[in-house]
Length: 337
Figure 1 (cartoon, rainbow, N blue to C red):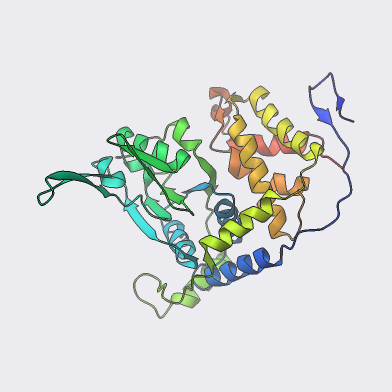
Figure 2 (tube, rainbow, N blue to C red; figure 1 turned 30 degrees about the vertical axis):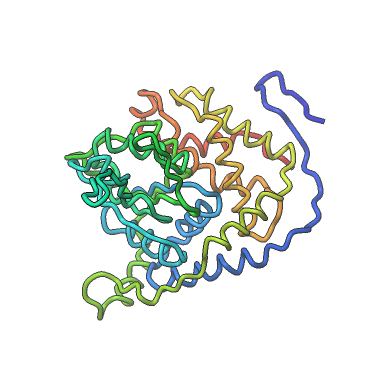
């Protein structure tokens, strides 16, 4: 039974026993193939790849943040080529209008009628480069399509085909000509992944691999190893995962702490709780398990929560980041056993 601790409002549980019953081998084989394709071009960034795969299988959008030149766009291109699906790229600029991404009506001279011409957002994998460069009106046009996987135009609804994934990049350093993404839009991204610089050993490997190559890396060697049916089958397997009460309680406790932490002005919403659950399932499956353990939650939590929290001015003055606070919360809470 659950026991309520009157001091912290958190629920304590015990860990049960599990028996493996699902066949996760096809899913793991697909993930291995993606890793092999990714390694043909991108060196290092293993966590980035695992997190991107997690978002794909959990049907969530990805926000990649990092300084220029650390393979944000390249990583997104490689992932898109490894998926047998339509791909489009949109370069966001300050003069981009909503019609440039969702489409517009064009007058047909033959039929004397207006015909809707679909924009580049009608694809399976959409890479949005420098998403923070477009103005608020264009950002708002993405709200419905990212959340509902549909757009409304002239009283008609147009549904997106599955899989539907937005991979957006942004540069945290540049301020000229950029617009801060509103919290409502940030919440539409399943994860915000911060890309670090490569280690000296990884940078040496990059130079060794591309020392005789001019221009951008050649992606012609990347094979499509994942298709819509495989993604759908993987999601059906994930839907059958066993999630025990103490795991749900652990997720609840983490999110609850973000709402009551002295350094956080705005905590995580129930959407964040659902995101933690979905991504933890995928992480467990990638490890060959059909059940979630606390380590799975701890791995995805910083990337699921960091863009959904707003720190207090005092915390920002201290130089703290949302990653620091999430790490503190994870270390403070009791872990289910």
